[in-house]
Length: 166
Picture 1 (tube, helix red, strand yellow):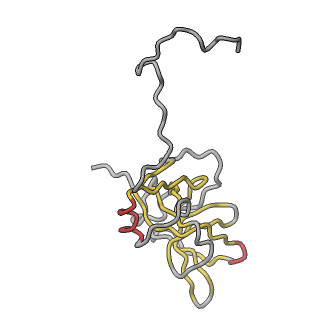
Picture 2 (tube, rainbow, N blue to C red; picture 1 turned 180 degrees about the vertical axis):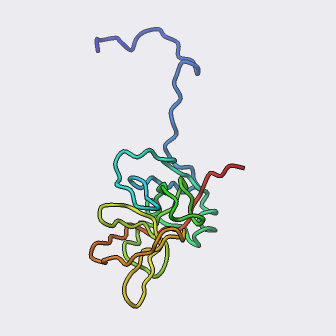
Picture 3 (cartoon, one colour; picture 1 turned 60 degrees about the vertical axis):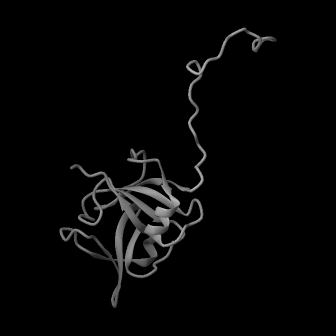
């Protein structure tokens, strides 16, 4: 820029300045960032350019403690959008699911974010005498025994939030 370009006698008013988006989380809140991609609740999703329902969620620390029983370190819990009908009525298509990314292993029968055969899914994992099974909440979707060597646990599903029509 040329010398003196900031010397203009321009008056700056509150209406002439674009608002700055607040990026710092306010004290007393926990920011939950987006987990990369969406999670299928059906056949799975190959994560590419999938539009997200929500990018960031800031939740009061007292509510996080009430839901989880503890206050996690920042970044541990991330959010992801569930896609598909296989987890109905437990989790609906488009629900936002809180994922504990510190759990990257099978930690007992529960709901998990998993990757299997290149697809990301939210499913229940159940250990049975003949192996580990991937189970949907919706009985229309058949459970199946997975090859543990091909399974990657990406996190444990903890809480879901949805937008419901009245």
